[in-house]
Structures are given as C-alpha cells and as structure tokens.
Image 1 (tube, rainbow, N blue to C red):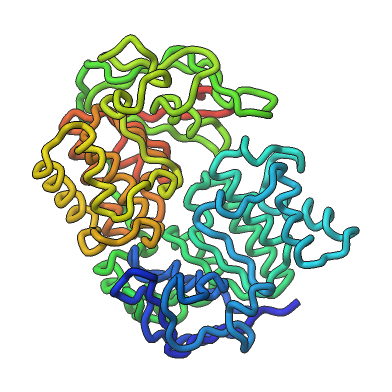
Image 2 (cartoon, rainbow, N blue to C red; image 1 turned 180 degrees about the vertical axis):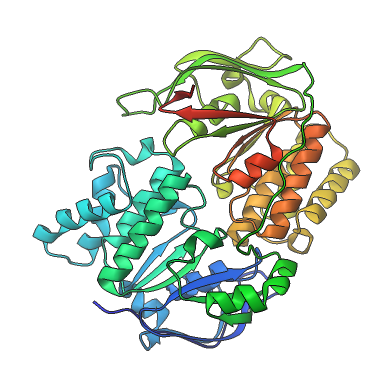
Length: 478
C-alpha cells in the first residue's frame, strides 16, 4: 500500500444556487505520504476541498467545477476507491444496525476476501478505542462513539488517501487522543496521504508535516508548521484561525438569580436495544441567568440528558418541568414547548426545515406571534453577529459545518426562550466566530436566559459556565 498523490490545477467549485465560489483557482500539489493540516476561517472552503478530493462533488446538479482535481493522476471522482473520508456528521456515514457490520461494510464493498474482513474490523475498532463489541447497536451510540466507529470504518478499508473533517470535535480528550493515535498508527502502517481539517491545531502538530491555509477559497499560506505559525501568526489571528498557544480567559465570578427555569426529578432513559440505562435517576434544578455545563466522556449520557431537559426524549422514570405548567416537557405540544425551551442539536442539519438561512431565523418568532418587523429585526441582528449576513438567502444545507452550527444556535436564540439547551455549540468554529458565539451566549445568559451546554470544549466551558455537571456512566459524577 502506498499513499496517493494529489494535484489541484486552477480548481474551483461553486455550489448550486450560490453566486460566490467556495474555492476558486486553487493550485496545490501534495506528494504521496504527506500529512497535511488544512486551516482557514469558517466558510473558507476547507470542507469543500475535502469533498472534492473525496469525489463527492460530481455532476452539474450539485454545482459548477473549474480546473482539475486529481488523485493519483485521475479525476478525484474516479479514485474514490483509494480514499477514506471521515465527514463532520458521523450519522451520514453509519449504514448498518450493528457496529461490527458497519465497519465491515466498506471492506465487503471493496471485495476484500471474507477471511480478512473480520480481523480488519476488530483491528480498526480496537485502534480507535471503540469500547463495545461488534453487536452494539449503532442507534445506542453517542455522537462521539459514532465518530470513532465511522473512523474505524474508514481505516478498515486501508485507504491511500485519508481525509478527516473535524474528526475529534465531538470527542472527549481521551477519545480525541485515541483517534489521533489510531490515525498515526494507520499512516505508519500504510504510508497513506493525510489531509485533515481541525481547529484543535496544537494536538495534531506531532502528526502533520505541512500546513496549508485557505482564505475564502484562495491559498494564503503553505509550508512547514514552524514556518506557518511563526511567520504568519499575526495574519492567521486576524483571519480567525486558531493558532497554538491561544489563551482564553476564565469566566468572571457572578451571582445567579434564584428563579427556577427547569427542574428534572429522577429522570432515567434507556435507548432501544440497549442493556442498561443511558441516564440513571438524575435530578437537577436550572436557574434563570445560569450557565450549566454538562461534561464527561463520550457515552456518559450527556446528550441523552440534554434531550430530556429539552422535552425531546421521554424519560423512563421521572419528569422535567418548567414553572409555567404542571405538564412534563415531553408531553407538551410543540407550540407550548418552544415557549419554554430552545434546543441546539449536536448535528445542526437535523433541525433545518426552511429553504433559506433567513427563513430559518424568522420561523420561530413568527410562530410565537411576533410581528414581521420584529422578527426581521431579530434575524438581522443574529445574522450580523454570527457572520451569516452574506448568506441570508443561501440554502442552509449548502453552508459549511461551522456556518451550520452558528445558524442552529441563532435559530434557537431567535425566539428568546427562557431556557436554551446546546449540544456542542462551538463545533467547527474559527477563533473569531468562537469568541462572537461565546459573547452572544454570555449576553443572553446575563439577560436572564438559562443555558445548558454539553461540550468537550474546555476553554469554552471555562469561559462561560457558572456551574459544571460532570457525568460518568449515566449518572452525575461525585
């Protein structure tokens, strides 16, 4: 097995329905076996370039291409068998009900001999630190566990080109370290070429040997890591690119109002097909103007607890109540629920229902009875604050992962709910939009909104949280 060579000659891509090119006139050569870190501000074209290299941009119905993008001297679309691509959303890559079957799916499709498939599956699952057997239902996995499984599926194919789009963004620190170790081991064994997009720059430096920076579709900087983060540091910081050594100040001490906004009393939840509860007999009280961070390893029950607090998962025991009604949140009608709590899902595209970014932002206020003028003013404010104004008429599904995340947060904020549940709200953000998102959440918290954030982003938790709730094995850790 040898690594793939990559060549872009005047390559560009414009998504269908968009005027601006996501990537334009790009010239780039990557030799076999190189390990490249691709950086840039949110929306600069990083994910588009990865999708092009992965052969996912094909056909006039999805957009317009320019120039050439080659893998091993042929069109990237025709070299898909050489490529392993880990997408931002693991749900879009898991296709089987059982975990082992999902990892085996790729090797089977590539014609790997039957007696080699299961050893490959076991090797890949062990390499990424997947803590369950082959029989574990994929539906019972947390977002971070799904990401590890999806990576195992790509490694089992032993690709010549490995493309990783924010591979550790939803992983706990230990899980992220396991993934990086698995990637390094796979590269050493196969000599595959690596292109990784990741905002956690510092943690990838031991693996990569080249950094390429995109500035909204154009090449800004290219060279060895020490050169890029030394000579171009100030420019990268102006662009909003995360650089090694960035320090985030902790949240200032503050008092919290005593008013209760949500109360969970002994809630438990068990996923279908799972042998045990994902959350066990958990109680908490959330106060107005309080920011509560739920932290813990992948699979500890954080997202499940968040969905119960949002009224979107039915507790097996206990209930979640808001003070405006004696009816548990999970039994309230949608129109009533949105008046009590707003939700940001772990995968932002799961909550988009309108054809344009602006339509998404005015939908909730209009349903709450706001006037057209007030709804439009709120949408304009959020579009401007979160750097989405130029994309107001774009289809939400054509946005980058970081832009989709900001839109999902803005959508939840648009109706000004008294409580807001956010699952990994800083996923995919560059340094500039990260700070703006943090500032916006601090403002709504200080204005009285109660926040629950599920996050592996330790600087974000440090800067925002008034209280931290650690979870382990479905319960609040001592």
